Structures are given as C-alpha cells and as structure tokens.
Amino acid sequence: MDQQQNHPPKKNSNVVYFLIVVLAALLITNVYLWFNNKKSDDARIVYQNDNKSLQSQKTHLETQIDSLENQLEQANTGKAKLSKALIASNDSLKAKIKSLRVKLYNGKLTAEELAKAQEDVKQLRYFVTKYTADIDDLKKQNASLTSERDTLKTNLATVSEKASTLQKQNEDLNTKVTIASALKVGNINITPLKVRSSGKEVAKTRAAATKKIKIDFTVASNAVAEKRLHDVFVRVIDPTGNLITGTDSGNFQTDGQELQYTYKTAIDFKDDGSGYTIEWTNPNAFQKGVYTVLLYADGFTMGKTSFTLK
Image 1 (spheres, rainbow, N blue to C red):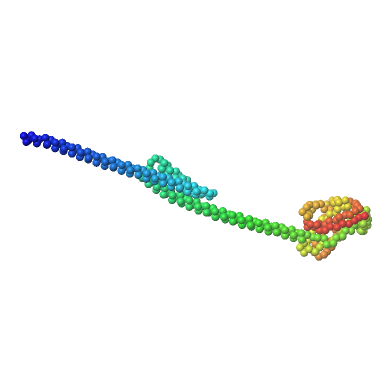
Image 2 (tube, rainbow, N blue to C red; image 1 turned 90 degrees about the vertical axis):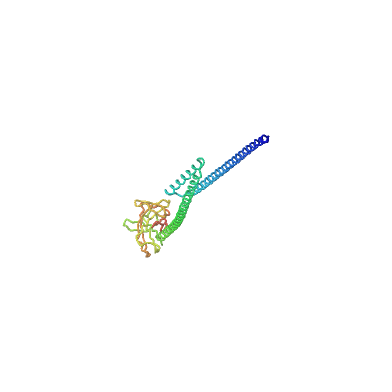
C-alpha cells in the first residue's frame, strides 16, 4: 500500500525538472538573441560612424581642392606673360585638380582611396604653392622691368627735352649770329647821272636827262661779319611803285621770303671803313617822281634810300 501511494510524487518531480529545463533554454535563447542584437547594433553604429567619417573627409578634401583651384586662378590673374615652363605647370596643375574631382565625385570612396586622395592633395598643395611663388617672382620681375622702362622713358624724355631746348637755343643763337653778321649800310647817297656822247657823266636831277644812277655807300663796322666777298642785291622801285627789271634781273632770298632784284653785284668787305660804289643803268627811260633804292646782303636788308627826279 505504501509503495502505491509514493508513485505519483515521482511523476510530479519529472514535470518540474522539465519545466526548469525549458525555462533555462528560453533564458539562454533570450540571452543569445540579446547579445546578437547588441552586436548588430554596435556594428551598425560603427558602420554609420565610419560612413560619416569618410563623408567628412571627402567634404574636407573637396574644400581643399576648391581652395587650391582658387589660389591657382588668383596666381594667373594679371598681365604677366608666362613662360613655356609656367604654362606647362599651369596646365598640369589644372589636370591634377580635375582628376581629383573625378575621384571624389565617382561614388563612395574607401578609406584607402581617401587616404590616397589626401596624399594627392598634399602634393598638389606643394606644387600650387611653388607655382604661385614662381608667378609672384615673375610679376616682381615684370614690375621691376616696367619701373626701369618707365625710368628710361622719363630719362629719355628729359634728355630729348634738353636736346630740343639746346637745339632751339642753338638755332636762336645761330639766328642771332646770322643777323649780327649781316652787313648794314653806314651812309648811302644816290647820284642821278647824264651820260654825254663823249662818255662823260654829269649829275642831273631832270628825268629826261638821267640815264643811270650811282649808289655810293659805306658799310657799318661789324666784327662778326666775315671778311670776304658778299653778294649785294639792288631793288629800284619807280614812282608808280613798280620794280624796275631788265635782262640782269633775277630772284633771291631775304628776310624769309623770295624777292626779285633789279641788279646784282658783290663787294669785298674788310671791315676797314671802305666806301663802295654801285652804278646801274636804267634799261627804260626815267620818269618824274620819287624813286626808292633798297640794298640787300646775307639774306637781310642792308639799307634803304630814295631820290627825286624832276
């Protein structure tokens, strides 16, 4: 009887053990799932953080490239004429910048690719800095050459101005010397003459009897004038204001203009107070009235006088 009564409790004990095993399994499963979920979450967070870091590095590289490109553009501003070497460097730098941009814009970059891009940017920064320094040196050289050119222009203008001034002074001096060296009449006297059949000449004041005139004159002392033969041009103006001309007439320059002369001769100037005589025969008949006689030498007027025939 006692053995039959103890059998049911053994059965209940097995159930309890089974329930404990089940609960333990569930607990282990839950712990396993919790660890797996946590590991997955941690991996997701790390992945997201890695993505953010890569994106940040990419953005930073793009900013650096923009800065380098702007630096390159500023270096190329101005009117500096680049040498072939600098033009080649400029083209090479632009190509490198373009290549880096393509790398950054072509999808997602790995950490290794970003590291390589960062190294490329460092090299590019070195080359852009060197290129900028070369351009600055070139601009300084151009500025120095421009300054030297401007200085030379100024000096040349100053020298040219001085030369022009000296030339003008020389011309003025030459003009003054030429004027000063021109012969001038001291005294002058006109004698109308009648020529008799015997050849004897007699002074007359009547127009009908006068055939020629004698011009007696002296030359004022002039230490500047050359002691040599000087051409003398005579102009005789009749009472009507017309120049008397003949076969011996011609043209000459005086006082900056060209005139026609009545008669031409020459005198030997010695600056010794000598007197000179010029005789001129009228190819036409003399008229009553006042005649004017002008003498010219060395391009200027020597003197002027007049005489009257009745």
